[in-house]
Image (cartoon, rainbow, N blue to C red; front, side, top):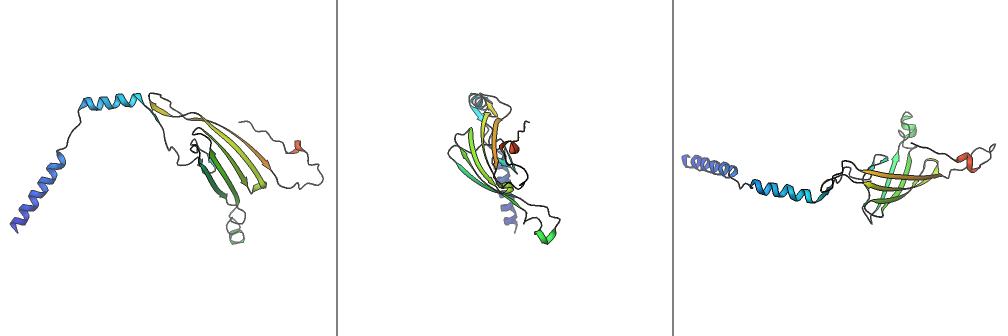
Length: 171
């Protein structure tokens, strides 16, 4: 029994000693490594895991040559209970594709069941957050979209003219 305790104590001491003793890099190697980091540009990656955050665009772009299909939905009001299956009957479905033309430019085409709308967009990343040789504290993207509602005209007393459906929003 004593031999077993001595063997265990020796093994424990050996294990703890080997964990404390490790090769250390020199300070000059660490300085050399930081100098090499300054020679390269390191871009921020995966701030978000996709180019959408809930229902809005994020700063991420679809990679060049990648076609990304998304199906999203918004439930209706849930106060009708089982009658509307807690908003499931009134859900708005959106199906769309995003295509990365380049790593900085993407386009998309979508179809929404709400008012039978089609929309397209383009997003171009102007600035990209980076450190190292090129320091940029922010990512900046230019985004533009166009939407067309194709729902049937439901007001027979009013003429269906282009100007009656024209809408401009400036933010």
